[in-house]
Amino acid sequence: MTEEKSLSERMITSLQAIRESATFMNNLIEEVLALAVADAGDIKVIRQRLNLATVARKAVDIGVVAAEKKQVGLSVDAPPVWVEGDAVKIEQVLNNLIGNAIKFSKAGDVVTVLVWEGDDGKRLSVSDQGAGISADVMANLFKPFVKGKTGTAGERSNGLGLYICSRIIEAHGGRIEVDSKNGQGATFTVVFPDSRAVERVSPE
Ligand SMILES: Nc1ncnc2c1ncn2[C@@H]1O[C@H](COP(=O)(O)OP(=O)(O)OP(=O)(O)O)[C@@H](O)[C@H]1O
Ligand SMILES: [Mg+2]
Image (tube, rainbow, N blue to C red; front, side):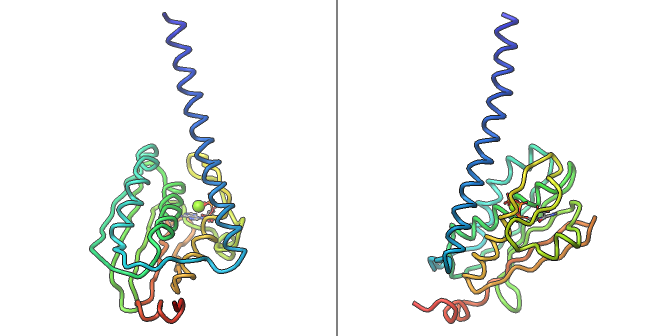
């Protein structure tokens, strides 16, 4: 009986490791494919009227598992804000920004996701209370294969996420702003232009 139990515990540990590897490989494959598409030319954006709050909540629901595992809080404040954009690709951006925020947070920190209507466009932001971004990483943050330290729980990095995010948001006619001081957390803000500006960037 004891042997059976300990075998089963070992199997669970092993299965967890396999699942983590599979998730990492899956992420890598998705990123390499997205990189190939991004480098092949303009990223194709399907333009549909969508509620940023819905996309933000979905991304937060996905992030909850990783956040809870690290005892990191995840809060969202997202009133309805409508944009013309590609829900799948915007969710991909948020998954990376929220994933990064959790990756570089420690137990007790809180990651905050906000959606609001700014003066110059619709905005969504992801803030964390982690170690922040060093000046050398910051200088090339949106370039492919740029990565700093591993995550606070030893999470691995490909250094592709932010490059792909920036390409996706540029394809929407928007931009990503970053505010971070080393040691004081980071805030990434995605700014979508109003729908007339999107119209000018991606005519039918
Ligand atoms: N919220 C953050 N706090 C601290 N450093 C960050 C944060 N977000 C990004 N970085 C730094 O920027 C680097 C690049 O981020 P990016 O998302 O492009 O790649 P990655 O997370 O390392 O790997 P992946 O390809 O899996 O996304 C990270 O390795 C990290 O050094
Ligand atoms: Mg990332």
